[in-house]
Amino acid sequence: MQTVSREVLARWQVRKTKKQKRAFEAFLLRALREAGYADARAEECGALLKSRNLIVGNPDTAKVIFTAHYDTCAVLPVPNYITPTNLLVWIFYQLLLVLGMFLCATVLAALIWLLPLSEAALFGASTLMFVAVLCFMCVWMIAGKANKHTANDNTSGVVALLEAALAMPEERRKEVAFVWFDNEESGLFGSSAFAAKHREAARNTLLVNFDCVSDGDTFLVVLPHRMKEEPLADILRASFMPRGAKQALFPTTRKAFYPSDQLHFKRGVGVAALKRGKLGLYLDRIHTCEDTMFDEQNIDCCAVQGKTGKPAEQGIVYI
Image (tube, rainbow, N blue to C red; front, side, top):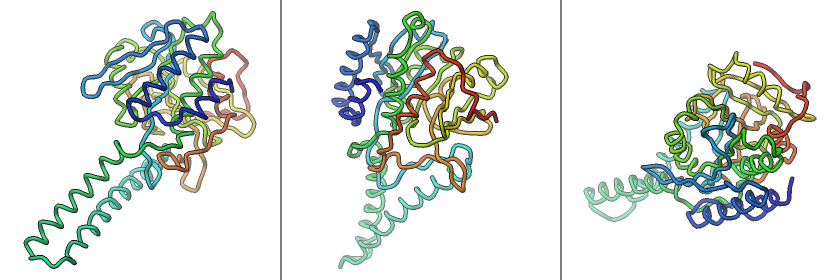
């Protein structure tokens, strides 16, 4: 990796508050301009929640748009466990989290009944405690203490995009655009605002989104089902170059679901690195202090999309 990418990993893993994001914005745009991208800029958009997406190139004329979100999340006691190829397991896990929140609120509310108060006062106080605890947990997930460890989610995507931009040959730079989305962790607001502002690109341009690409040996490249038989899909498969023990899978959205910014784009492709387990492919550790895994070989596999070279045959699996 280049020096500027190592600096991102060492110094800029926390990008949650407005102040933190503005500081990172200044750092990233300066690095890109020094690399020859004179048009590197911040674009503010969005109605419900203002987002500042960081952009290089012209998304409205680019043949391909590469993206990753740069905002980071609050630290949580349990990870966001995602199983893109096993939707039932993912739904079950989300239900367990909700059940856990209600159980915690119920236990704390029940403790109120140990106080020497009237039954009416106890009922009111316990109800208030139950609601307050649920509200606190919901607010904490969005506005809680920033996670200091975001190696995979999504410093890995930020660095992969940066490495691809820095490696892009001068003669190809006008053909692509790079976008670092804001406010993904709040509900994909940055990419939603971008899609609304660049409607033609959102409908017709191939977009490749990198989110959590540094912790796992199996790359999941989720293609829109409508792209399955297009020549662009074949080019994308051939251009992805897994190395060594790495493997790449190319399911369509009918066989895999990956919740990230590419969902706002008709030709959006989601890329993530996953691990294998008894329940299939999975992503864990993110949103916790355990998010420290950063496999540089994975970054190379992603950044190679911005380079020219012969496609690797070993490791590519078509499904």
